Image (cartoon, rainbow over all chains, first blue to last red; front, top):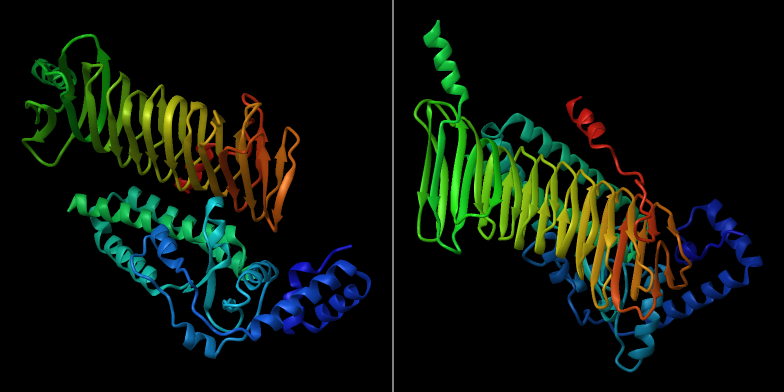
Length: 227
Length: 297
């Protein structure tokens, strides 16, 4: 029997297609495990919705930004985003939220993750296992971070302008490898879109984006060396 | 006719052969636009520079108190290719660089920094900081000790019989470490396989990551490690029983022994294999010749 555990949040949000919703409902009738998980999701959502809104206590973007070579934060206003964001959870996110709710029931920590209609997505937590304390914190960042994009565009422009100073074979190799990295970034983005809370995918995407910057920097250094 | 032949013969002969005394602690700095740099250790306190080059080129050797610098200059046109063979005291540190330059180092015990753009780098020996970088060339490192940094873009990295911290990065190439003694390993590529067959020490940190390729990790018996496995679209396989303690979608953790070392193995689109040392197979690592053929299409 195939469980619907990973799509129960979508079911709860009404985000499934009609056919999937029907299949899920039928499955819930016969699967006690998924039914219990769905009940738990409902409870967590209900509790989260009555909590006071509050910004994350720790900003993880600085660490992530440094990993991908972006110097300044790309954090958007929580208030502005929150005003037009619906509350939606995936199962791992809800698990993290449950922990926070238990620990901070009096203080009312706020935790919510966005999905769907806008381009802002949660970029979660840390790479290393010893950073699991940070795993319950979510920072709001734009996956299409303008600082990163600007730096990539700047380096790409330098490469385009300086390609005449490089050996054509070198240019070909650099462009081929940039395409390899871009393909990897695209695959990671698509995977993350389907599984936004996946810590591995978040970090893998950040690492791969950082690799693109590294290669462009290398290319830029070659151009400068030949100038 | 004879004069022409004599001129051609002269062009083919080594044009430079110079030996100079060096002080202990001196460093050799060679920059060569194209050709090759071969550095070999010998049991003397002198540096011998032999160079095959065009008669239009001049080899400039500057011996300062701490650095012996070797460059070429052209009396006509742009830079030409030079093939250097340089003998140095084993202790001498090396800084070697070039554009279209293959670099080979044999038997030194000092620090080594070697960088090329379109060239292969082979280093046998070196200690302290050992750094090899190329854009289009393969990197081979053997019998080095110390803090090792290896970076190429479009080729493979092969490391054998090395002791120390190793960081290795490629974009389109495999990374393979064999018989390595280290407590700090960081290997990452985008399109290629990653193999590590070496020690896993208590308290150490080992990270093996690729986007599109297999990861093979040799795990010695008696290892104490917390192993984190992540793959988006691949399988996991171990040649020995593991007891998974923490599972999430596409990511899980298990502990071996006391769990002292931290091991992270990740492949977005590839399989992850844990083997016993010496049993690592070829996996799905690509044949570089195949890769080159693709490049030429």
